Amino acid sequence: MSVAASAKLNKTVKQQYLDLPQGDEVQATYVWIDGSGEGLRSKTRTLDWELKSLQETNLRDGCRRIMSLVEKEHPWFGMEQEYTLLDCDRHPFGWPRNGFPGPQGPYYCGVGADKAYGRDAVEAHYRACLYAGVKICGTNAEVMPAQWEFQVGPCEGVAMGDHLWMARYILHRVCEDFGLIASFDPKPIPGNWNGAGCHTNFSTQDMRQEGGLKVIEAAIERLAKRHHYHIRAYDPKGGRDNARRLTGHHETSKIDQFSAGLADRGSSIRIPQAVGEEQKGYFEDRRPSANCDPYIVTEALVRTCLLKEEGEEPADYSQ
Ligand code: ADP
Ligand code: MN
Ligand code: MN
Ligand code: MN
Image (cartoon, rainbow, N blue to C red):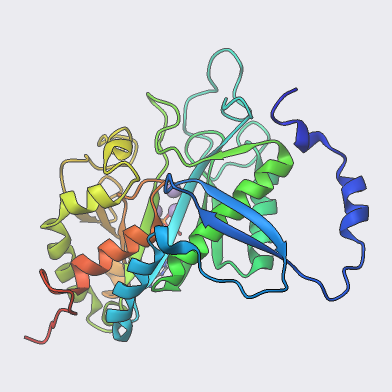
């Protein structure tokens, strides 16, 4: 029996049961991040008791605490989640069994059966996220065939982690129905194939207002001094996962060098072209890996850009 067996069960038969009236009972599915810091698990109960928090072991609480210190600055985040669709034997979906698809070029934002691999799952995921109230804001096919991206945001404070983790959970569930696996490995195929990141876009109220570009530049100066702290925070293995991806090729920067630039996709931090023109807006941190923990990434950005270097107090830019 192949591990994709459940995907082949008859979904029309299942629908008869899903349509049965449920009275006042509600099924509540509890989703949590497992001990690996990357995997998700879930279980379902009939809701007749109050849910108590079981999350002491994940990093949401620390993130929430740091965000509460900078509430007045209204930190917004938007994350671009890249991922790769795999068959159940972990072979990239739609790739030939012997050999490789044609070289990269036509696949990014591609249209057509020979360019877009697995769009059914992508569209189902988008709809399911909107239905669930997840703040998904876009999607596109990526540079490597069978690789995709969805964007979530803008979300304020700890909500970024909440929405991204839930979007990942929904992706795993949708893929389960299609007999696919969603992989967040930052470099699923070694060699001349793009890796998968989780670009994190960040702004504060001051950055979004008139003169915001100056505030963005000040934040980038602070980021430049804490490159290694961020690299340690940006994948679950403290930089080892991202070392396979941040090579300086395939629209990435080198893992051991900090760089920032306007409209530069080869830098650690990119100021989008439109932000340069309007002199306000947000910046993009291109370093986080596809399997990063968004609670840790957003917390690290706030600690470096908005808190005083040692103590956990908001920095005062008026001095
Ligand atoms: P890219 O050009 O890098 O591919 P995308 O369009 O994929 O950019 O993603 C842009 C992301 O930036 C989205 O997640 C969006 O929510 C986020 N974003 C837009 N404006 C802001 C802002 N002011 N602050 C923070 N994030 C923002
Ligand atoms: Mn993008
Ligand atoms: Mn992308
Ligand atoms: Mn991006």
